[in-house]
Image 1: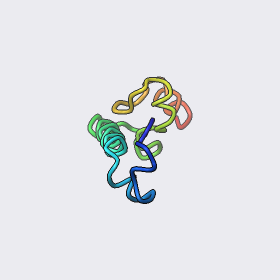
Image 2: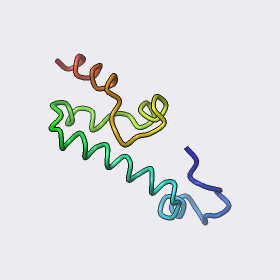
Image 3: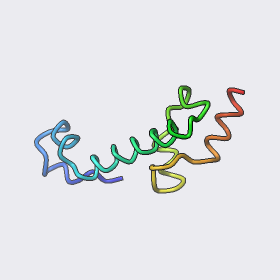
Length: 78
């Protein structure tokens, strides 16, 4: 995932506050976590919606959890 050209920002804080790609990323993560809360996932308090990098590497999107990851985590704590 690319947040933008570092030379377009004054520092890392500026990048995180003003990079549209990073803002979109944060919003997608929020949507995934909200989805998990909305369906009342029984392991949400354990995984908080899953690992961002794992989900992105598998599906190239992060708005929904990876069902295989969820199944694995549910078996781990069952």
